[in-house]
Length: 238
Image (cartoon, rainbow, N blue to C red):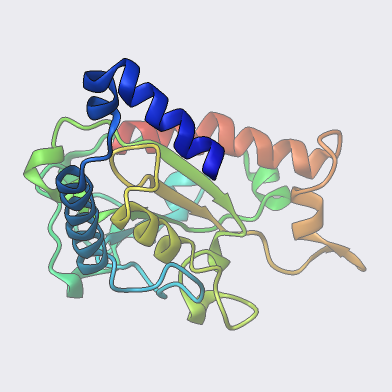
C-alpha cells in the first residue's frame, strides 16, 4: 500500500493533469448507482411474480383452437361446432377474438390417408394454443413461429394430463416472454398433439409404437401425419 501511494505521488508530480483525470469521480459514481437503482426498480415492478415453477396452469390469456379429427383424418363425419369452419374455439370465455383468422371461410384440405391408415393411427383432435399477441393489431403482420408438442394433452391443462398435473408449458412460455427471455418477439404458436390411447396389440402401447423407432410402421405413419398433413394444415390456417 505504501509503495502504491509512492507511485501515485510520483505520477502526480510528473503528470499532474493526467493524475487528476484518472481520479475517481464521486459524482459520476453516484449517478451510475442511481441509474442502476432505477433500472432495478423498474425490473422489479414488471417482474413481481417469481420465475420458478410451478408456472401458471391453462391458456394464460391466449386462445385454444381445436383442429377436429374429421379434417385431419379421412372418412370421418361430424366434429364441427356448427360454425361451418370445422374449427372449435375452446376459450371463448377469455373474450379474446381473432379478427385476423376468418374461421368461416377456410378451404377444406383433401386428406391423403386411407381408412386402413386410420386403423393404424387412431384419429384424434389436436389443440392449438395462440398467444394473446396473435389477436393484437400491432402483431398483425408478424409471422409467428410454431412449436409442435407431442404428448400434447400434458402440455397445458392439469385436467387433461394423465398425471393430474400438466407441464405448464404455456405458463412457462408466458413468463419467459414477460421477462424478455425469449429470442423471438412473441411466444410461439403451440400445437399440442396428443398421443393415442390404449394398446395396438396386447401388451404393446399405441403411444410407444407412435414414438418408437422410425422403421416401425406405426411410427412411420405418425411421422408422415405430422409432416405431410398436420404441418401444412397449421401453416395454411395460422
